[in-house]
Image (cartoon, rainbow, N blue to C red; front, side):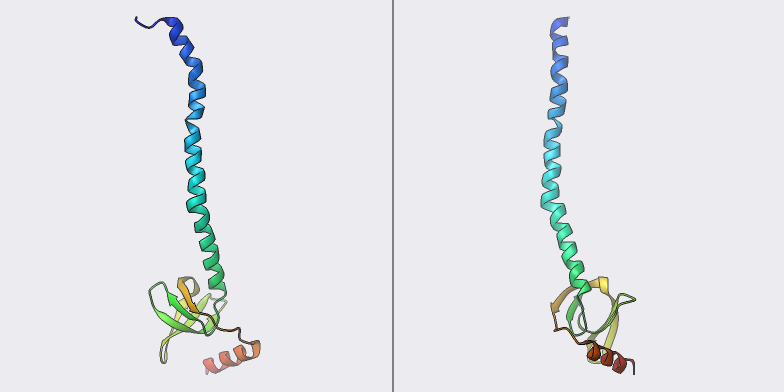
Length: 122
């Protein structure tokens, strides 16, 4: 009616290039999202896993529930820790439920560790 057929045909060619240009900001948003959120979170999880694997007897820890205690025994095959939360009160905690390690101790020799395990089982 008011639009000439030649003008309408010329507009179709420019539409395909504009459609591709609309995806560029979306791709940039995903790239920024990855570098600002995903990568730092993955690094934090990797560091936390390394801290959990390095827990040994004598370390002071805080569980996810907020309980502070001293690790008295590490049960590697069951991924558990025996934690003393008060004098004579020992609880078993899953290693994955440890939130932070407050203080690290020096590595214990194999002989001293075996002797402590024998004494604890008595």
